[in-house]
Amino acid sequence: MIIDFEESFNTYDENILNNYGVFNYVCPTCGAKHSFIRHGTYERNICYSKDFKTTETTIEVLRLFCKSCEKTHAILPNDVVPYCIYSFSFMLDVLIEKIINFKKISEICEGFNISFQLIFNFLSRFIKFANSCKYVLMNLGVLNNSGNPKEVLASFISYEKTNHNFSIKYFFYSSWPFLMSKFQNILPCPIYVGGTG
Image 1 (tube, helix red, strand yellow):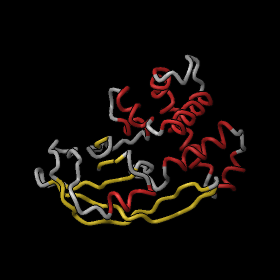
Image 2: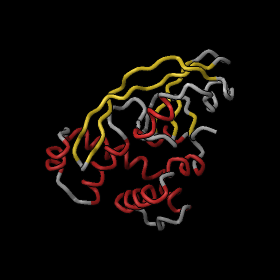
Image 3: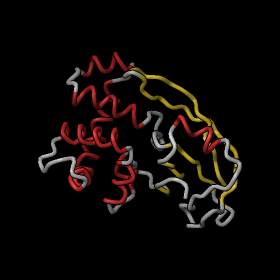
């Protein structure tokens, strides 16, 4: 799979799905450049947060075929979490309600119409992620050395809202692939981090 951090839900259809030109990605399997052709689409359900409420939608995802190694790869926008129906912004909104706004679990469950188990799953993922992203936030100068989970989340959100590129910075400051620690996936997956070009 290829995650294009320069494309969002809003720009995906125009710039990726309806693009019949050249795809300037590097194949995550064989490393070939400019070797992709369209190979079809599939539908994927996504839950995202709109005004701190759960909204569901279906997006059409483009698959590309690498002419060099004959493997196919899906192109995902920046907010899609691999192998998860919940978007990254949805997870952040749930965490904001719990860690920063001090809402009770029952209030969050009711507001987002989700289970308490899912909230604890997001919290568990975030705590693991917070330990690895503290170093990056300190290097970027947005977090001091203490870095409790609330400070890490607040710094992360502040940086992301102003710069919109924490994902790329995290990848370059870290020695392991960005999404492996971000979402604590146990399935390794080849990922090209970045946009076209």
